[in-house]
Image 1 (cartoon, each protein chain N blue to C red):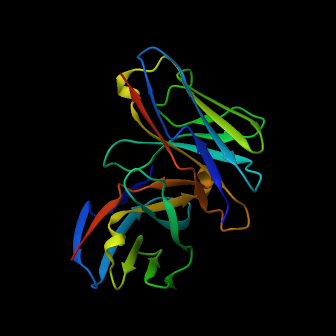
Image 2 (image 1 turned 180 degrees about the vertical axis):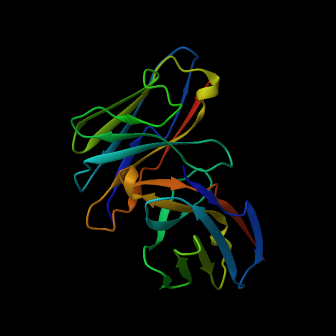
Image 3 (image 1 turned 90 degrees about the horizontal axis):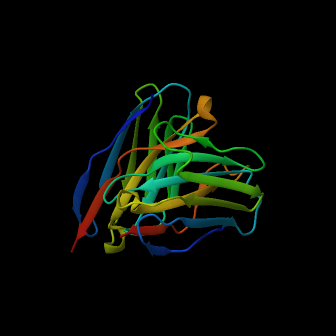
Length: 116
Length: 111
């Protein structure tokens, strides 16, 4: 199956700093990537849809200025959590949709963010 | 909006069968997915249904009834490694085919 690589796997940062998370499709071109957030024992909540070469589409309630998404190439999307606060601590997962596979999603391995 | 419901937790015995139900209320339905997620890991794809009926894949089967807004995931011959969360996700055509996930069902397999 398609491989989606996500880095870093975990990060600890101080409150007020920014953190960048990368998501790469290794063996296919991902025109669309999705960013999810997951709190402990809860399901995945879609934050935004990232389209290559255009602005991301954010879900209601997600601050676009706080969660900056860049999808500059067909294989790379990044999520930057700006001015992180403890309440931003969560598990962030990217996924890519592969055409001609019933458009199922392939997920990255996730990034556990802890803001002190 | 979409409303996707599944039980929070289920417990079963090794070797047994467990059925995880998922009900949904949505417009523009365009497929239902089941994913397995172990703690601290990313979800992995299990099954996909877009037409009514049963899809069987080894020990796992998934059923869909579009008229009832209902699906289930059936896990047979349970193994300890099947202890995980199982996520039901609905794809909405009108929303760019993005997936909306249910709350997930944590399955605990006991010896």
